[in-house]
Amino acid sequence: MQRAGYIKVTFQFHREGSQWVGECLELGTSTYAATLEETESELMELVTLHLNTLADLGERERFFSENGIEIFYNDLPKTVTINSVNPDFYVKAHFHNLPVTVG
Image (cartoon, rainbow, N blue to C red; front, side, top):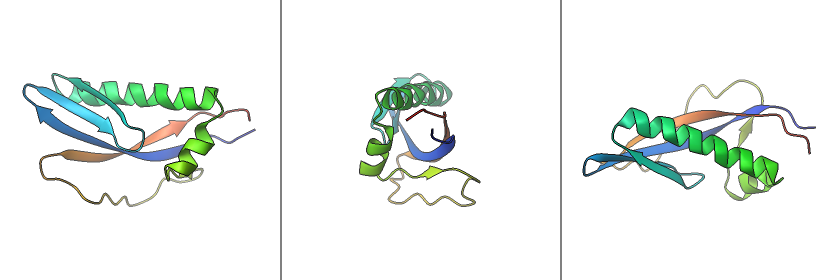
């Protein structure tokens, strides 16, 4: 049995015309909506679905290992560094709760 934990993923947002586009850089998950808030909310929902699917298929740990995604089991990091930020993009770190899975 695996413990519950957290991962840090990077959300990147930018405008395309009248829409906001959001992408989780580590997962490649993306969406768009009329407002930044809607885009972020939809992206969080899609990231949850993506992570749940990986867990259901038993592929979560392999995917994390191959993509350099670290699982935090105790306290969240006190600082977060985001590199290579394009000034045309809004970028933020997002800590996502991982459910306990039975392996």
